[in-house]
Length: 223
Image (cartoon, rainbow, N blue to C red; front, side, top):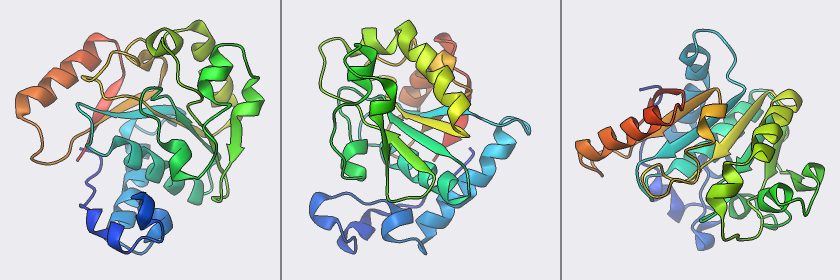
């Protein structure tokens, strides 16, 4: 377990953006215990790969609603606040949320770039956080699995890894759909996020097994 994040859902009542139910601890409550936990997770990454830099990584979960998108976004913010050039890519083409987190238009985004309807530079968007750039999911498509398995995304991921210190991908839950399974092996690290006491142990084991069968570099868990 590389990080343990306390339950911050009570913070929604204090959030400046409570009406939209969007709460990012490092933006809305930077002095909270949750924010400190994300900073500790940032520090843990240097030990995750035995001193080697993790250029590209993703946080997934077994099921919907565990908090993998929020955790990915807050970790991206923590890395950017630590002085790293960070790119956050919304690769959850079925239930995208990154554009909501940072109040940006959803398109043009990843789906447009992968279909050849936009250049990759058009999808890069600044955020209010210095050093943090995002790529939104783009318009809805009928074939998200095919797009995420494409050679175009593999090439894009290599290009982005050269341009940024860290590239974080928000991907679908591993047991909900198979969209990202063929893409995850291209990354340096995968972390499985588990909400405490939410799912039976055998479900977490099934998610772990599926990740390993796909060849994904599963390094550990975030609780």
